[in-house]
Amino acid sequence: MAVIVNKEKCRGCTKCVKVCPFDAITMVDRKAEIGMSCTSCKQCIAACPFDAIFQTEEEKSEIDLSAYHGVWVFAEQRDGKLMSVALELLGEGRKLADQVGCELCAVLCGEQVEALIPELYAYGAEKVYYADSPELRTYRTDAYTKVIYEAIQRYRPEIVLLGATHIGRDLGPCLAVRCGTGLTADCTRLEIDPETKGILQTRPAFGGNLMATIQCPKHRPQMSTVRPGVMEKPVRDAGRTGETIRLSAEFKEGEIRTRILEIVKSAKETVSLSDAKVIVSGGMGLGGKEGFDLLRKLADRMGGTVGASRAAVDAGWIDHAYQVGQTGTTVRPDIYFACGISGAIQHAAGMKDSKLIVAINQNESAPIFDIADIGIVGDLYKVIPAILSELEQYEEKK
Ligand SMILES: Cc1cc2nc3c(=O)[nH]c(=O)nc-3n(C[C@H](O)[C@H](O)[C@H](O)COP(=O)(O)OP(=O)(O)OC[C@H]3O[C@@H](n4cnc5c(N)ncnc54)[C@H](O)[C@@H]3O)c2cc1C
Image 1 (cartoon, rainbow, N blue to C red):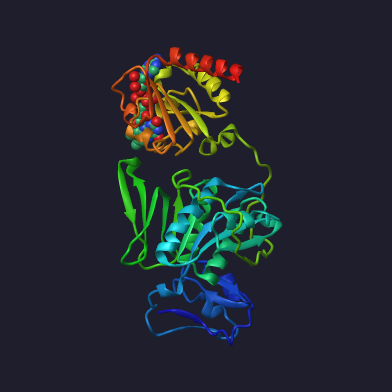
Image 2: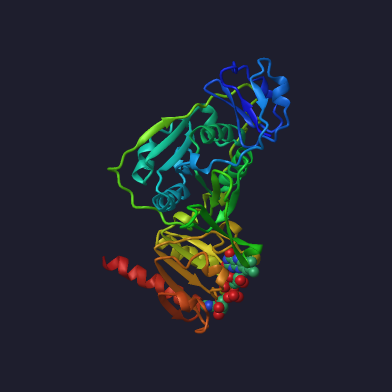
């Protein structure tokens, strides 16, 4: 049995919105609209003073998949700066939109972040849905969920992609529950099924020991959070433009339940492995945490940052924020130095797409040499100082 609103009778009093235990009702153009999370509990029917809500005799019909169009990318921004993963998703979203034959759109929320809209066009968005409000300045679950959920209800995208950042991992499930649809978290590959045009979402499961490909055949939008660093950023073209659609961002008293007292940036957040052009990573071959001091010297000289294998993190030599690999960060810098790292499959999964891999290992049969572009067999405590001194001489000659 489906619950339906007679739009002519609805006066927009919002009584139904208040009684709905599943937050399934929203006001669109001052008329109630019943979303996919409706369970036909009928509380809204009883609450409506205008008899505008009723139940049909037919079974709740299947969702009309053809009513949903477009690939949406959540353009996550912090302090007015777009997160890299948003751009990576525009690159991936373009491929998916081309295969489905639909448009690529970005959803941007914030306070006075209009300056980012041309950037989103430059990276391939044809439309930008933009919500501007002081309440959206810093991410809060209630505020972002409300604005984006209402936009989804109104504009009906068929695919919604979010970065699997702390924010995306919080927002994605909230939106999916509101929309009553499926979400696959932390995807590492997205493809379109040529037959159904549905999305095939692949992610590591069971601690990375299995790759699962998941579909969402009967519900819309199909939603995924995607691991940062896995997809490639598209080429920026400042000549591109598009259409901006303003989203309503009005909030009632008490609608946003969280208040931000203070934002503390931990060292963890300032590590930007995914943006680094050069990463000098160390593993168990360092023999102790002091080894990272040497790696830091090389990283500083090359304008990069240090990274680590999980074994080095587990040994307590460095924070998890520096871990590269399947259960750490996926990186694709211009140069990746693997120093005293054996090259286990779980480590390689997070760095094999680096443009140039330099491996330093004293064991010539270490698997890292199978993926390295330059392999140096030797003790890293001899090789790295030698590289540093070469760099010094080179700088002096310049
Ligand atoms: C589900 C799962 C998820 C995982 N996720 C990750 C992940 O995200 N990232 C990750 O890194 N690992 C991950 N691992 C662990 C992974 O399998 C390996 O155990 C780990 O990567 C090994 O780290 P390592 O190369 O530093 O150490 P080792 O394998 O011990 O290698 C040390 C290397 O250093 C070399 N060496 C020693 N001394 C020197 C020296 N003086 N100079 C030069 N070379 C030297 C040795 O020859 C050796 O090759 C995961 C494992 C599982 C099961």
